[in-house]
Image (cartoon, rainbow, N blue to C red; front, side, top):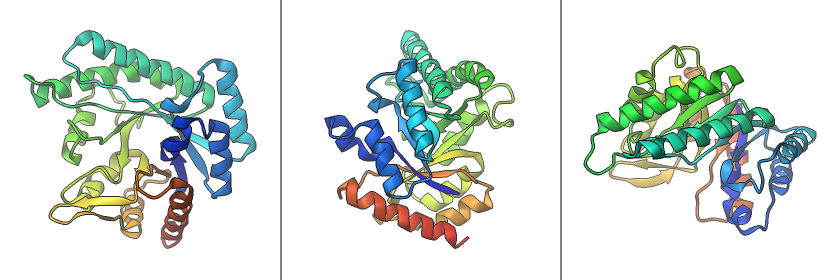
Length: 263
């Protein structure tokens, strides 16, 4: 396993303009990351010239761009809005191709008022199928994140993946972006259930246990679970803690690398 970070970890600085994507790549090298996950929200431009520039900057720094990420909603009751979300994902498939990123993170969404989980699941599956028809020939894996809503549990997330038509799941063009801090209740059991479907991850510092609330995530335990499931990809940090990421993320990087070294 490798250790990386999402650009989102440094959103405080990227959103304010205090940090550019190039500076984020410099920071990644400084703190010893192997790879980066470039969240869509922080691109000042998406023309080919700028994308090639970022790809070059990452390559010259020895960093892999393991993925990109969009903030879509596949569960809107409005079919036009769902179609717009699919088009946005397709746009970011094309951007991923230019960047050389093999994976794109997407969301599902919640259940709209007056509708059912089954309807939201059906809409999400249909949207994913259309996105995969576009992404597979372009060599981009689609990763559905467990991000609340209809992906609140591992069982729900897996049921959505399995409901998608074709052989995308079996061929690993579709999987989950296993957010290691988003499951509630018995998070380690949920992680263990979802791990075989993981094509990428988001590593948060905390997990939430029923009756105990937030607590430090046990990454020695988590990396063992992932390793047993055959996961060999990146632990991509998505830092959301109160401490400044400039000090917190480097310490988290060290901790994750120590846990991986014990496998």
